Length: 130
Image (cartoon, rainbow, N blue to C red; front, top):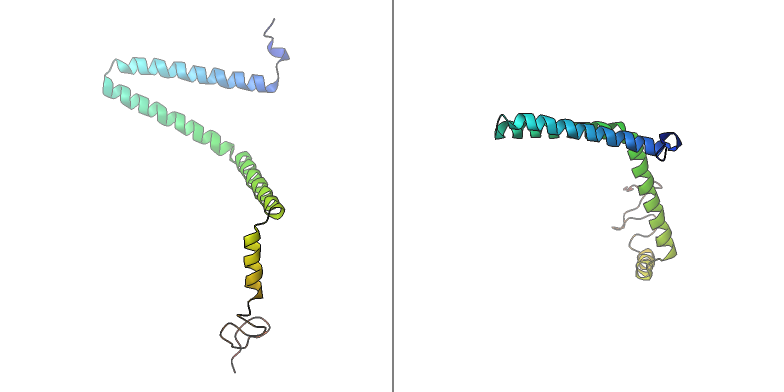
């Protein structure tokens, strides 16, 4: 009773079940390919291609079933990376970038109530021509 399944957790049972399923699929695949190999090389290639297509379809179906969980995880990771980047930028600002920003803010290219060409603007920022 050294390998008692009753004392194992959910992850062990899930992994054991998935591993057994994969082993059964691989054994069946080898039996099918051995039987088809007797018919010739072209038949073996077609059978191998069809088995690959079936496996890819099964993987795609599993990914579609897990898509809500995967998209939640990816969005969480992107959000965490974005927040970490913002904290880094706040903690270590670029002094050259800050000086360029302050220099740009000091420019008087567009004075109050006028655009850069000197035309008057209304309170929404639209051009006001008389």
